[in-house]
Image (cartoon, rainbow, N blue to C red):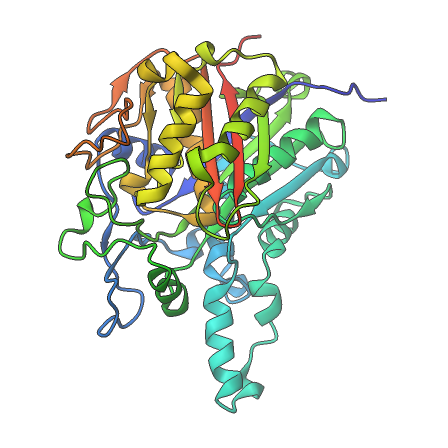
Length: 416
């Protein structure tokens, strides 16, 4: 019988975002306060009120996927494959008959293959149903990000997709964490990916009054916690983390980036898009995460905030941190890398988990850029406009999503 509460560590990380196609490129651009937001080029925007987005630059799926397989994958799957490739190379984990049944994959997405859905829907309603690709369904459904990764690397353990809006990435990581902890797996490939820069998605989010209209100054459009924030900037990309049971990682002499030490998830049961007053849902989630290993609020040295740059999120997330941390909140660094990457939706929680891990490893806190005019409702330390050196032992990544989804994940510097 496998031990019930096994220690779970991070041994591999990978990411593709609007500011870089590798972890190192992303991290260096984050520390340099570089924005990845620019003019939207993915489709004709002549009559669109939203003209900016966080698009991947220079991404070629052929760098990560066999050319004959590319057409079988919506871009969200391609991004997941790219991030996984880097993470697997980072951790050095390989599967064979001795361990493949003990390695699983959980990769999520908020909207999945919306690019393929739009393209094939137009064909169907235009009388061209015979032109719909036989690969349409498996290229669009969310669990095929996990499925394609499992096929490529021969991973035969548990495998499925997670869908929980902007909390997806954290939920996927947490599911992998629990699978290893309870003994259902020895290693897990986990993360999130999104490719929603499409006419339907952009129009839908705009009509919900969620997106920034700062079209004339794209790089300053995403401004979490700033008084003049006017919405988030839609972005694309993905991130992947390799989790392993500690003893197995040590036997492989794997490099251990950090340890996962807490997780909490709740639902607001309040509104389909707006957070509950005072961020009470993320309050409960963060407290659950802290309770997992008896971590005191004062032990936390950094919070990677959800920080979307919307009026409601940033205000209520600030209130939530004050409730959870009390007086400690006044000196606790909290920042949002969405100020640079934009909002990856279902990929955000995974991307921000990687940034949280990097902050622990390198002892540097990522900044919140474009913080120019303080908001009386957002009066904490948001690490404004400049990265900051800090020795962080315990850090939290928080995510909140439509439907009242809340997820809080805690990483700790690895100590043998």
